[in-house]
Image (tube, rainbow, N blue to C red; front, side):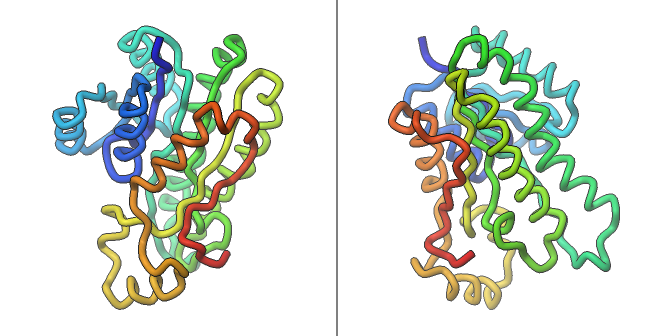
Length: 240
């Protein structure tokens, strides 16, 4: 029987590449999304991967959404990829409290919500794979991103702690910290700023979404079963 993989924010950008890669590797994949119905429908038409809409920042919505996934795919979640995230950038002295709360809630609280709702079943089965998508900016910080960096740094501490709690139950929990990757979020960066960023990346380019997806595929596979609590930096050699 195919293992069931659930990807939050799984219909666009990095999440879309993760969903496609896992499907191609033989997983039964469900992709979560929230607002962009057009993009989600296009993703479904292209891939045939079932799509499910709910707000990952709301615990009860997560519970309902996961239940829908389990009914539709005929089993419990074996592999969870917490990828959903947003940014609301500004310098701290200008940041609205609402934008602090929104980023922390969507980017960090969602990881608690999703993990809390699947980890008990994983413990009973003595198997599970959880990958949390952090960021290079959660490791080194970034001007104008105190909210985003705090959330992504929190994901790393969460990952390490849950890994310790889960290791004896056959569950691995790891984080991936992408550097700058070509997505809709980075496509809006001004060309002069883009060139400055690239000048600090030793490999000399932005990453590809497929390169993050390949890292996910490795960490959920059998060959990575001795890796847990780790943060894999996929950033082109950018200095932290």
